[in-house]
Length: 150
Image (cartoon, rainbow, N blue to C red):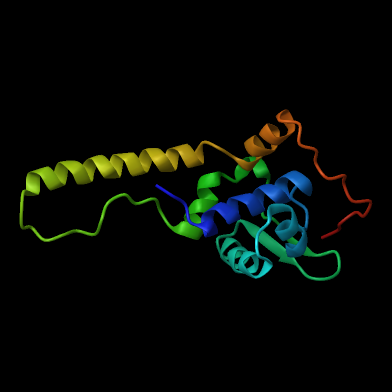
């Protein structure tokens, strides 16, 4: 299975907000620069993440996108499903020609594998990723001297 750029960039963007701004408003240009993501594509991704309730937006010079909940409550799987849909390793129901028993067995196996892949994505939160970043020695950006009141 290979994630599209949309899914990979979405995970990178949510991590960026959680890690560098501790979930507070972050501008698209800053995320795009740090994560090497085209800003126009990132804006489209954030519209889907906003529709899914994973981020909110704030207008103005100190605005941007922020996490809708704590990084410990947002799972990697939430972002993948918001941008890619559910993990599916099976194809749409095909005709009944051929060996239906063999097809049923393999389709069931693929459904089980898809559930395991989703469980794997759901086992990691963005807080887990932030802790991993710190453990690897990556520095978080210094907190802003401004206090954001919402």
